[in-house]
Amino acid sequence: MTLDSKNWRYTISWGAKTLLALLFATAFSGTVIAIDVDSTQPIQIESDSAVIDDSQGLSEYSGNVIITQGSTRLEADFIKVTAVDRSISKIVASGSPAHFKQQDTKNDATTGTANKITYISSDAVLIFDGNAKLSQTSNSFSGERIEYDIMQKAIRAEGDESTGTRVKIQYFPNGGQTDPQPETPNTSE
Image (cartoon, rainbow, N blue to C red; front, side, top):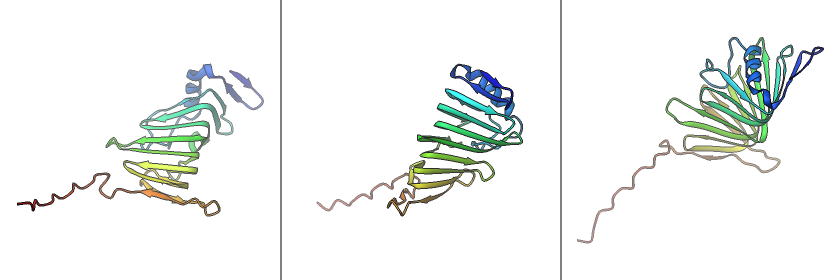
């Protein structure tokens, strides 16, 4: 770990993951609105390297980054966390692609991938940008941009007219359950 006393900027190498978790918990303790709807769960972060600037409320993680909180998991090549008054306000994850997964109490999963995933805590929304895909139970959505309201479980998807990318939706009205085929009467008597 190196410390630049001029900026109070911390650089932590891959081998200091335990220290990183401790620093992150200290830097961002207090009331936290986070990715998981159960925001009381601790946030755990793993990465190859991290830079934390507590005075600016910024932290950056790179190299196989994994953030988990409760049943929610975010994986990316690079993640930037912004905090205001020690409360997370925004998370931006980029990768090829970045991945999101959230289990609910019924053991149903919401999963998503995109080149960039942005979480905005004040709106409890995830924005998937660039080659975006989102699946809820057996329903799936894809497009250039997808907005997912975590609390309402509402989705808004957009294509990109300039490239001809359209929104694609596969929706099962019966929650993925298909109705059994009606029996055909035997008329061979």
